[in-house]
Image 1 (spheres, rainbow, N blue to C red):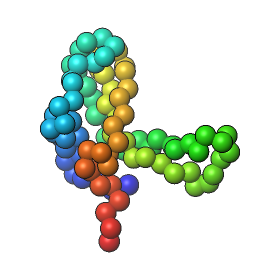
Image 2: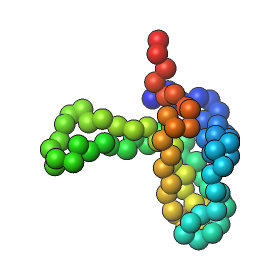
Image 3: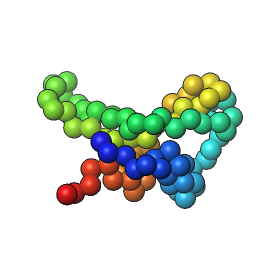
Length: 86
């Protein structure tokens, strides 16, 4: 997945625009690291079967530098297209 050059800053900017609460819900700190690659969350069809290739949701990952809590945000919902049409 090609990511924008300013990916980390863009993620934080988009979350701020959306009114995301910056405090960690576990430890109440506001000290986050943005994972420098998109994380793919698999989509399950809830039947227990496995499809290959399995559909995925590209996500941004933030990790709390204090407690290690991991937050995932769907890139599409943030308006970040990681699969531009050519």
